[in-house]
Image 1 (tube, rainbow, N blue to C red):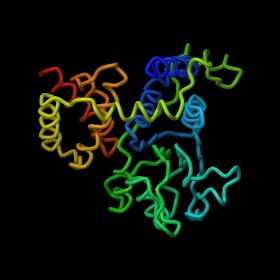
Image 2 (cartoon, rainbow, N blue to C red):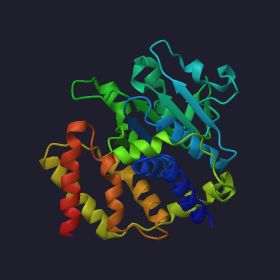
Image 3 (tube, rainbow, N blue to C red):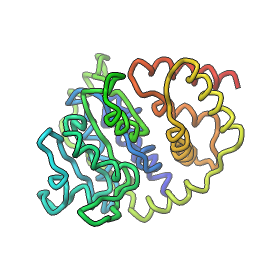
Image 4 (tube, rainbow, N blue to C red):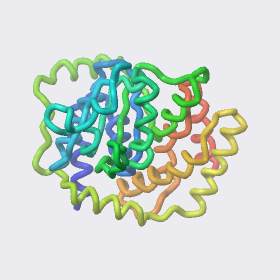
Length: 284
């Protein structure tokens, strides 16, 4: 059963990457919901390494990594121009590092990829992309232009990755002296991944869950935290993936904790959203 493999993958990644459980969980939710994710934080916090490690856990998975700069052109991301022949047009996961350092015209040209997993080169082409991950030290704030915020809005899952501060965690990190290698029992196939995705679509979302989401929507509006209706619609996919990881065929109240990162735009909203979600879930 693929769920057993998924749990094995999660455990192996969690054992290897110190204090990165939340990042690992978010990556799996993003891939299985096929929604884009944004990892915020300084270099050297294992964001890229964890993505590469997960890619090694899926047989036949194609991983594309690129560091954006202001001089980057869309052509630079295409397989025909990338060493190894794996580009944004033929990969399953793409990691775009320093995302917001790209010039606006190139970033806007990525909207079709982020939204619909299609690319114009120049003809319209459907690509096998499941998820785009972006990383950056920088976060858009309320002074950013609307085009930049529209792009940021396409990343449904967001997480701030923080440096280690615990002494025992630091000592554990210092003792890691070999690269991550998944065990044979923790290898998924593309066929299993596709079947899991189809099963996830059939997971039920009870009216009770929708009622709770509406309570959250009303409360965050009162607190002047803006979340588009599109984001609320899209986060249903995350709820279903969360239920799937629990081995359930319907979404439960506990799954809503996994969409908190989809309910904020600015870092200043994170604490407000967390308080609202926790309060409402405890009340119901």
